[in-house]
Image 1: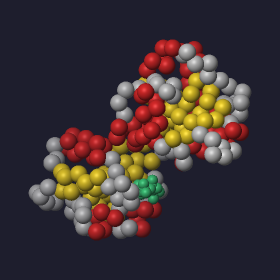
Image 2: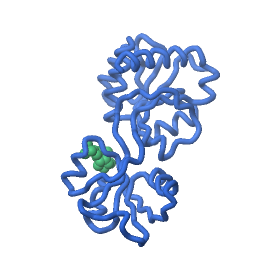
Image 3: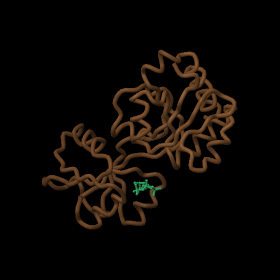
Length: 213
Ligand code: PRP
């Protein structure tokens, strides 16, 4: 049994929003706001330690139970989520997965097998399987927008937030694949072991999310 719960936060965009949420529910997050090179941060006035990690690692830590809770985007959950509870939509970090093509190209107007470039092969595969469409999926690690420009792919499945990256590269979204936002996730064993503490934490966050709605 742990005396303090442990939460994994996704570094970067979601980190700041997570800290804002925690502060809004009364948690003193000054150690996370001034992290230095430390990787584990203790919330001063609440029995919770926070670690900062890359999104896929947040899921790994929660699944293995070394972190009881995690905050991670639905995009990462859809791509690699397996066994944990997804308990709350935090309603920040909102964006969407879209299918996008070069402006003017007729994606559906051909019988040849389309090539799809993406950082999220599982999301893309599931999307086209539901349509009963056979596609070739090419995994790209970043700046997926390059693939149709260079002629590597007919389309991309990627995260769209403002739409600026697509626009500035001559691409247009033609279909939504899924909506994305940050989620609070919980390790299944922790949920039983630390039910009271975890319920208190979820209730605080949930009340704040509703207050903002
Ligand atoms: C994401 C995504 C798009 C961009 C979309 O990339 O893959 O490229 O943001 O945002 P926009 O609609 O507001 O333009 P990210 O910044 O995560 O970088 P990466 O492509 O190097 O992974």
